[in-house]
Structures are given as C-alpha cells and as structure tokens.
Image (cartoon, rainbow, N blue to C red; front, top):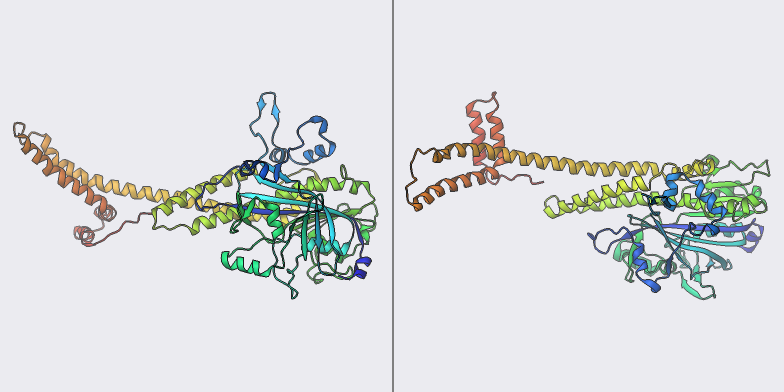
Length: 554
C-alpha cells in the first residue's frame, strides 16, 4: 500500500476493534465425562495462571455507574439473569443464582504491534482487554480481544479489519508471507517487552501439522495468548484442550469515528461492512450486481441520512462483522461513558457475544451428534450402551441450553432489538437451532422406539415360555395329586423322580427361550383360522428344521 494512497485516505479519528473467537473444549479421552465448570481448572493453578477472574460491577453500590445501569436495563429480564445472575432478596439467595458466565482476564498484555505488509509501517495498538468467557455446562469458550488506536488512515483500518483476526493462514504468498494475514503481530508488555510473535510465514509448520493431525494449527501469538489452554493435537502441555469450531477468521466488532463520516463512499461502506480487502474509495470490493441490495441487507440506517448532518451514525452488519461508524465531534457518538462508544463496548458487545455463543453452541451440539453416531456399532453391546448414554446426555444438555441460554429476543429497546435480529438473521441461528433440535429429537425418538422394540421382543419371549410352561405345569401337576403314593418311598427315589421332572422342564424352558422368536410365529399361525392344520404344523416343522436361527438383539 503506497504512502500516497494512505495520505489521500480519510482519517479514522478513533479506531477500536473487538475480536471474538469461539472455541470448542476437547477431552483428552473420548469417553471422559464432561465438566460443568472448566474455569475451576484455571483457578486450581493459582499464581502460575496468567488468567484472573473478573468481578462484575454489582459489588459496591458506590462504584456502580450510570453506564452499568444503562447496560443492565437494555436487556429483557431473562437475559439480565443470564448475563448478570440474580441477587439476593429478603429471603436470601433466589433460585436462579449466579450468572452461568465466568470471565477471566489477562493483564500482562498492554499493547499489540502489527506490521501489515513489507511496505506499511508498524501500527501500535493499545490493548484494552483480553478476556476469556466460560459458560456453565457447555464445552464452549469465547476469547475476546479489544484494542484501539487514534488517527490512522481508513485504508490501514480496512487492512487491520481484514487481516488481524486470523487464527492461521489460508495460503502463502510468493514471498512466503501468510496469505491475507499480517506480516508480523507482537504482544507487548507495559514495559515494551515482546511477549510473543506471530509465525504466519512458517509454512512448513502448518503443512506438517495438518498432514499429521488432519486439523489446522494456530499461529504462535494466539497459542501464547490462550496458555495454559493448549490446542487439542498440540504437543504443548495444557490444563484445557481446545480446537477451532468455526471459520479461521474470527468474528469482530469495530468502531470508527471520522470528522465527516458522510464523506465515505459506497465502496468504503461495503468494504467495512463485509470486511473486504482494502481498496480505493471510488471502487467497489465486489460487482455491482452482488451489491445491488447492499443497503437493505447490511445497513441499519435509523440514524443515517446523507442529506441531514445531524443523522451521521451508521451500523453495518454481515454476521461475521458488526461495524459502527459516526462523527468524532459528536458527544452522542464519541462519549465513552454515556455515548455510542460506551454502548459499543458494553451493550453491543454483549449482543454480539450472545449471538456468536448461540451459533458456536449449536455447532457444538451438531458435532456431538456426529461423534455419537459415528462411534455406534450395533453389533457391539458396549457401543450401543455408550451411544444411548451419550444421546441422553446430549438431550439433557440441549434442554438446559434451550431454557437457560436460548433467546429469540434480547431487548425491547428498538435499536438493540433490531440489531440483534439483523445479526442473528445473517448468522442464521434460528434455522440452525431448528435443525439441531430436530436431530436431537430424532435421536431421542430412535432410543424410545428401540426401547419399545426390545420390550416387545421380551414380551414375545415371555409369552412363548409361559405357553409352553403351561403344558409342563399341567403335565407335572399329577405329582401333587397323590395319584402315585410315594410318600413312604426312599429319599433317593423321591430325588430321582424330582430330577426326572426338573431336567426336562428346564431343558424345555431353555429351548423355548432360544426359539421364542420363531415359536411365536408358530403360535401366531396356530391362531390363524384361515390356515389348515397341515399349514400350521408346517410352520412348526420349518422352525425345528431351521438351524442357527438368530434373534435380533438390538
């Protein structure tokens, strides 16, 4: 990118970006039980762990500020209880209890230095937060990284949005640089010390890892950031194992303020909304046909009107990205406490967190179902039992997710409600939820029908045994009728008579159980008045002559 193009580009007075990276927690062993509170593994490390739990704002009432209040009342009551838990009332702790979300934060990373390519100078960003979100009872975590800078050209801002949030390169350029990735990313401490450096250019590392594990690797600076969590197939030690659950481009939120946002072109808005590659303002990132309905699909223009300078705030959303654009000189837009900047960092961050958490969790359930069915072997009794237990666990967890975490609406405030609908519409979470719900119900119905089938087989066996046992009971009942008076007979004779009756009866019952499925066909034929006696006994002879008759056990 030439220096002339950068100088001609509009200046972003304040640039702020939040990366959201949903990850799936993996287990070291396939049948290892799921853990409800993964954050306890970090707490158990004590001072060795760089992550510390973040206390919420609901502590000292004197420290509770207006922005906290505005954030809280944005959401509907059931979403409030999800995000913040429920406080104690007059009768003590209420039924809902604490929030099922736990947030842990790293405070050792103060800045991020980014070199986008060979020509561009390094950019230095201040890191506001590095947070890790855990969710009770679910194998999902979300990493959130917030960073910001002032007075950078729009072209560079577009390049940052396009390149920085990459877990690994999709390909490599001719010069060896990772395709569509920054040339170099560094995490810096408050003293300026380099803590970790990216390795997108290490082509051999990524190719070798995929060849060995059939799973993508993660760039070195992201691995460092997540420690003591470790990649599932990595050789590094880690108390929690994770792997990618979505696309390698991390979802993001971005806030950009300009002296005159209405001077931006349609091409600028398209690149920001769709997180496309940086380019001249007088061109479009895609064809005119592709962008015919751009404003209708990706723009929320309730506070935007090119003909009215008072309406200069615009929201852009494509699902993968949520971008807010406005005027730097307006207090409504730029105030970090009560303005749109404060809302972006709190209300809109939480709206995006909920939406991406929903999508990641639904993909997790889909993954669980695939794993459960792929490991099922109907010829193996242990495999069938394991499959049933796993499906029941998934069903129970899905029910808890539905009633604890799943929301169609998060707010009655028009703006937050509309933006959540726009976001979830692009993510298509409602359709995915219906698909996963149907799949879970189908699995559960299969277990129910299989249980009924097994019960029916048991009833058939018991019916056959009872029918044949009735014959044996009548035939041996004469022993209790005193027809033969053997009361004074020797003991050995009584034992011989008992054995002479007990052994054939036992063999008859064993044979009846073994042939119960086939004998049930004979009993059914015997009760059919349309068949002749010859046909009825023909069925019996077929049963007796049929060797190795095997009953379906499952």
